[in-house]
Amino acid sequence: MTLNTERLVLLLLFIAAALAITLYNADVFLHLTTGRYLLEHNAFPEGDPFSFSHSGAPWNLHEWLYQVGLYALYAQFGETGIKFATALLFVLTVDLTKRNCELVGAHRNTAWVVTLLGVVAWTNFLSARPHMLSFLFFAFTLNAILQYRKNGEVGKLYLIPVVMLFWVNVHGAFLLGIALLGYFLIIQAIENRISGLADRPLSPIFYTVIFSLLMTLVNPNGFEQLLFPFQLANQWAIEYVAEWQPPDFSQPIAVVYLLMVAALIVFSLVRSNRVLMSGLIITIPFVAASLTSMRHIPIAVIFLTPFLTRAIEHVLALIRQHSLKRKVDGGRTSSPISRTLHRELGQSEYLMNWSILALSVVLLIWLWPKVTVLKKTMNIEQFPVDAVQYLDRNGITGRMFSPMGYSDYILFERYPRQKIFYDMRVEIYGGSLAKDYLLMLYAKDGWKRKFKQYHFDFAVLRLSDPLFGALLEKDLGEVVYRDKRDAIVLFDNKMITTN
Image 1 (cartoon, rainbow, N blue to C red):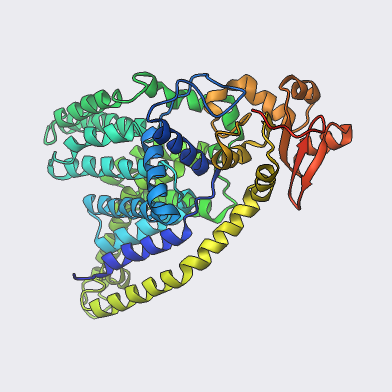
Image 2 (cartoon, rainbow, N blue to C red):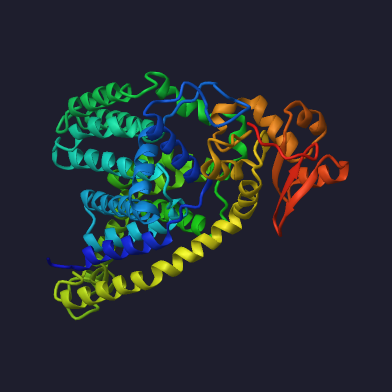
């Protein structure tokens, strides 16, 4: 197989992503626990099976297909299988984003430079979570739309409803696909009206929207699934989830994204014309959404990258025209910048590319066990691994209080013998229970009354949690385990062995 530079870059990105991805995330533990439950019971639970505070209450399993696939992959291939599968999703998304740049007229190398810059802006979201599939499906939907707008091809456009059948069952962001289709339907209608032409009829996009909407109903929750993203966004406790906060532009990755947005604005205005201005205008909703919540940055990057690339190409065209007029390079017909970006790299360097790939694979094999050990060390540093082992050794179970980031890990390790009070599924608990949880965790006024109301048998806490200090101050429990970060507090000075 010919290994040109483009394929080499994708393979190197795959290797880098596989090394970087970690499974040690509270959401990943919850997905694995849920997938295990669904496969073991071969049925959806009638209500929440994981918490004693919300036991039996309705639970919208909007990501069930991803969770089943994730745990099946984990059971068959372990952590390595999940990391490789996630890395593949990442590489496919990057490749589609680069192709989207080419569809708007960018040269391949310019497209690669801007695409890789965009990747830097959303590397924080590289993890084994279902949003990776949303990134891929969104990039595919945009690819299909851009291809139709460029040459009228409808093949990929008519595949979108099939994609939607999977998307609606793996992640709540499926509505972004519908919104993207509807958005371009409106844009195409406006362009047809302004130009007085109908080179791109509206009917293909319109029918795609209708059939995609019908596919969204093919899920275990029916119409309720369409309402779930709005219900989640309106949850009071969302404001305490870090990735729902506005981006912190003191962080380098956020700065990269801000620079991309600024470059799009500047380059679009440098050579102001209808094409560039329309590209700038249609990115506004996505950029605005990214400024309200950092979890929207990857989608915004995937969307604006093609339009930024097109704006850069127009600036390069200006540079080439200027160079031709001045003829400062002895009659050459392109500027140094243009030649650098547009040089066909790797066409005669296949042997070197294979050598680089072979060296990278050897490096991967050498680093893999070292990285695995490092990630497990990180796991111990982020989750109460030793504390949970103490619970198991001493048979401690019962009504447990723990920080929600700990709860999903404890579920993964101890369910079904252990249920939790509150975890990362903030959308299912409602505002009242969320307020009770935060009141107790931060030992606010009235915490003691609430704590007694829930009849906790023990608590797994961080030493830094205000609740731990309050329990010691009030002498309301016995600290039976303590390490440099975590502690276990038993109440009534007895070992609880019943759920």
